[in-house]
Amino acid sequence: MIEIGRAVMVQQILTNASREGARVAVLDSATPTATLVKNKVVDYMKNGGIPSATTDMVTINPTEPTSAAYGTPVTVTVTFWSTARRGRSCSATCAFISTSPPRAIRNRAGLPAVTD
Image 1 (cartoon, rainbow, N blue to C red):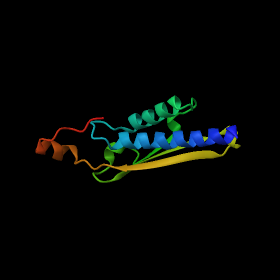
Image 2 (image 1 turned 30 degrees about the vertical axis):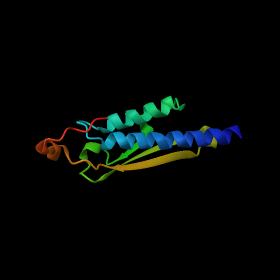
Image 3 (image 1 turned 120 degrees about the vertical axis):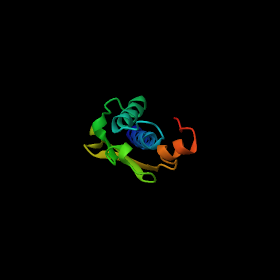
């Protein structure tokens, strides 16, 4: 019973971590780089009770979020291999689409930048 509870908890942490990474990737900031996104995901996982989390567990598409065109989804996938699950993996994926105008349009219109 405890192992099932832990598995559900880990799956929820992965889901939330992928959502947090995707959110950071589409924010209207100067540098939503892959490194920034991966570090945000790993920090979330470690704070959630997965101390073995590494950036190797995080996949971003497109590889560099700054290259995503306006209106294009950015997908963040987190995969965690668990020895408790006999070597099977858990994964979670989240995709966000930027809905704010590109920086150049916002600047021309005199709109303030969106901040975290």
